[in-house]
Length: 78
Image 1 (cartoon, rainbow, N blue to C red):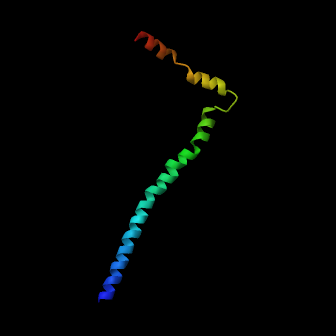
Image 2 (image 1 turned 90 degrees about the horizontal axis):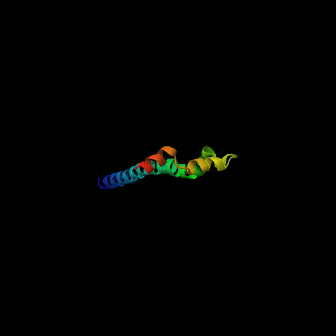
Image 3 (image 1 turned 120 degrees about the vertical axis):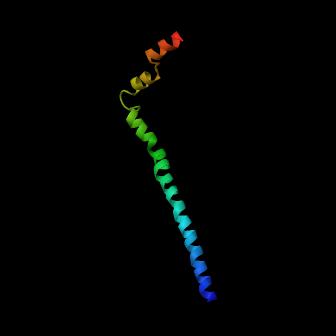
């Protein structure tokens, strides 16, 4: 009976380690695909979406850098 108990204990230990390894790999896969995947593509997506490499890049950047008139008036008022 002892050899069977040792085998059962080994199988159970293997199952627990394998189960925990699988449970740990799910958040790592999510992190890799979502968080790090976003970081890989964000510069290209931003440059295309914002148009900072297009023909109107200088005008777009000038608009974004200017303070809005409403905010300037509120700041002056305060």
